[in-house]
Image (cartoon, rainbow, N blue to C red; front, side, top):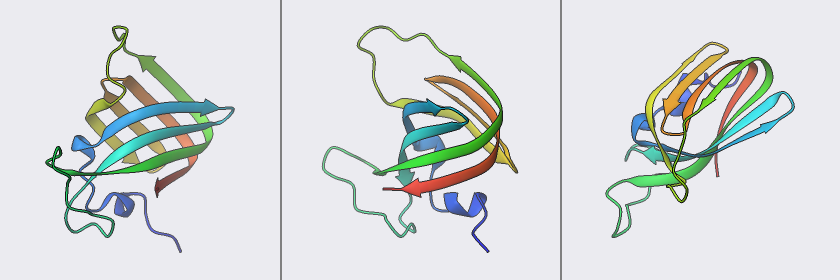
Length: 116
């Protein structure tokens, strides 16, 4: 049996992670992320000179979406393409996130967490 969704976020500081992009295709939604990894994470690397944390690219993929609500925040032209996360929760098949990009609420049959 596969690992639970919550266990896939072990040693990931999701509140310090950032959203890079939201991609919607039919009944699928993909969040491109820069995950902030803690030292105990298997893919942790010492931060570079300009960073105080280890960021690692990854994805959160949702398939079989039955409910979806996106509320995009307004951004000035030329603003950052990395969006800070204020709140994040997964409860079974339900997902909610509030960030500088806006808010995302959905229910999906499948939620996968992938690191690149």
